[in-house]
Image (tube, rainbow, N blue to C red):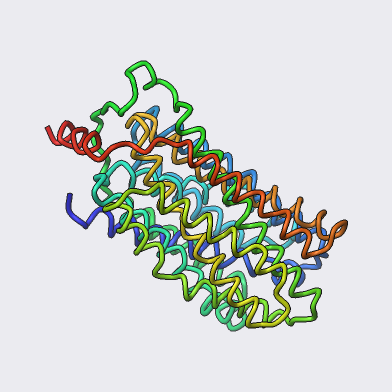
Length: 391
């Protein structure tokens, strides 16, 4: 298959992520200007998580049920455009909170549909590389929005920035017109034919491993910020630590994705989880900026394992269940953010930072144990399936 469909989807993915990530870090500033306090800001942020989860799950079901993925993406982007436009005219934090519920839903549908289409349009020999590009694009979006979105809001105001977000989503809807719809051909998997109607225990183990791994990642990131704050580091220092870890690990998903296409995905995933296992105590015992920077690099490497998880899930699932399978992986991320934030916050209060990080190493250990029981499909079987598709 040509590179054109994947380039279009990567560009659309970048634009959608820029709107969501760009405003995500600026909502507290905007809401304070509208008279909202810390509790109101927390409510505003909280509503988007469950909405994102619902959007991701619905996206997966619609993908497998109706197989009109391009039209679904265009609809979600159009609804997202309308949501940003309404937000630009909102005058109270209550209005923005209600609209953020809809925004989280649209964001979940848009991003997960691109992930699903990428999996269905990718051959096994290039699947890791394709998903690696999406993870790379996600990191690039954080850099772009970190540099541009704040200055735009300071110079022209938040309503103008929200209108720009609406224009960007409208551009994504137009790009969606040129997407390539994945073929409707169903292909068998390595398992027995009777398993085609369910995701299967093999995938369930991968999903559980992904959940524990993302709980470890997000919990470590959140805990690192809290720990540095308790040690008296400024907001700039905390942000710089995050940026350093992200910048150094920026090319990692491209390398891991391409490498997984050659040697397999499972052992590389275990390696990423093991790196995260080292990152957690490193953060717990860090006291200097250099210590936090080094631990953040390790954590950044673990956080780039997403393309391996997505590619492995696509490898093992029947074609008519890929949408639901990848959507569930995306949902695991939303669930892990909520879970890790609550648990880490409570643990910090009762146990302290160092003990919390040491206990948190249980999560990647469980992820490694679950992943070790996953059976990776053989390359010969995947190649045979692709021959059947082309026929």
